[in-house]
Length: 111
Length: 114
Image 1 (cartoon, rainbow over the protein chains, first blue to last red):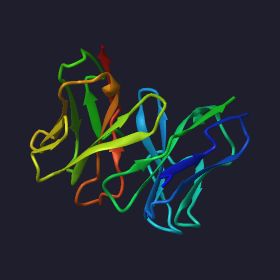
Image 2: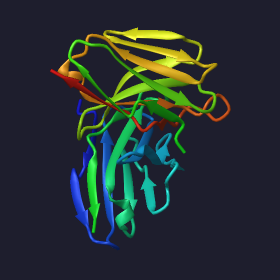
Image 3: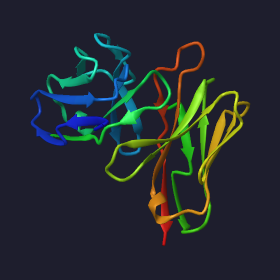
């Protein structure tokens, strides 16, 4: 099993550009999450999903959109990137609540 | 807002010593979890302790939970160089708000000196 994978691993964007981060899990987990990690801030929840076709806002949802069309995939979109969105993005999944399994992260730099 | 706050922010110890880090949180919880993050990697789950448990062990890890003080501690015994990492506590939203979401603290950076 690959677990949780994230694509791409690193990306540089210019302000105003858009992009989509892909998260895939092969553990048949119901719940999936997108976090961002900034120095000194810990992990902050952006959006999450409790099942295929569902999404919900987390702590810092502004500037991001998500979709969960397939159970195994959770996409995070940035419609118009801003320098404040420079961060490391982590995807995680869990069977229901409790233990979350994390991907390796995507480093995003917005110039 | 951060539910969990770890203390200390950074800790350096000699290999073989024990390392203790603490987590405080603000509201009632169902479960508290500890995760480890090696530099540049994703988080890895270490241990979960439920609100009705006071202590839990897993290998060299010992976790305690004091719900009256809203605090938890993680003890790593006989530390090894490979234990060098950041450690995060994570709490759910408690009985009234469900536990599908976790809130992570800012972490303790542990350095083991060979």
